[in-house]
Length: 201
Image (cartoon, rainbow, N blue to C red):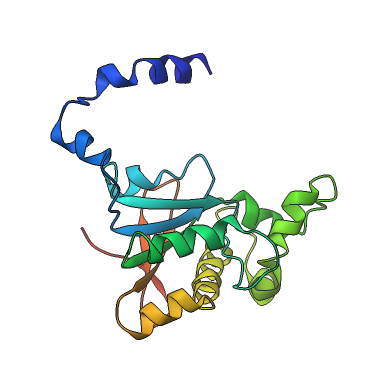
């Protein structure tokens, strides 16, 4: 923690806040995409994409889960999606899963999560749609089939939001599915045929 705190204290000395780039950020944000990914500390959207401050709007949670539209009660995910589209006008949404995901691992192994009721309730959102994949996926610690299946399911959940459907139908929004391999750095993209492939640099 000391190293993190020291870097935070010296942050303004390492960045030119007098530059036009940072002054412009104070006037507002105009991100190109909403990036939905896991809260896993090994997944850093700006590092993966090379994004500069202001370029991506992030939504992070355990397992990059998008609750279906219309669930009762306040929902940070729904609020973030709505704000990104209605206020910020983003035209691309990326759902990015990753290898070695703890949330997907818990679903695959059927762990007893009674000591973690919040985690259990959260993962219950993703469990039904992943049931067939959870049964058939091999016991691979990197969990590619489970994590990739989850990305496909969360893209489907996104389409349940009226604001998403309206923009898709009018051609103002594009959805992207990614799978990030933690141990290699490869980013796999979901193709039109439903498979994930690494695109050559």
